[in-house]
Amino acid sequence: MPVVQMTQHLYRFFPQLANRTITVPAGSIADVLRAVNEMAPGFADYVLDEHGALRRHVTLCIDDTIVIDRKTLSDRVPESGTVYIFQALSGG
Image (cartoon, rainbow, N blue to C red):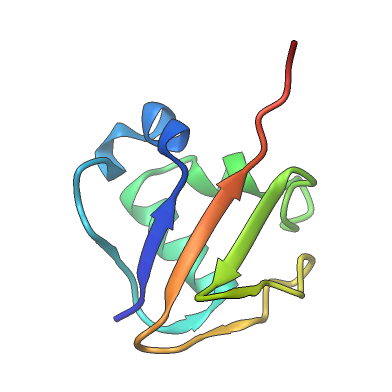
C-alpha cells in the first residue's frame, strides 16, 4: 500500500495523523486524498480548493515526481509509492 508523508506543521492541524505510518489504497491522487480525509476529516478541505483542485501553495509528489494534474488529481499512485504533501508557509 502507498505511504503518505507530509510536512510537520500539518500534523498540528490534524494530530490524528501524527506519529503513525499513513498507508492508503493505491489509485489516483484523488483516491489517496479521500482516504486521508477519512482518517482526518477536513484534511481534503485544507489542501483542496472549492473546486476540488490543489490549492496554489500545496505541492504533491509521487516518489520523486511532482503531481502534474492539479485539477482532477488523476495522477496514479503505485502500490509501492510514497505520496509527499508539501504546503508552503506564508506570512511575515
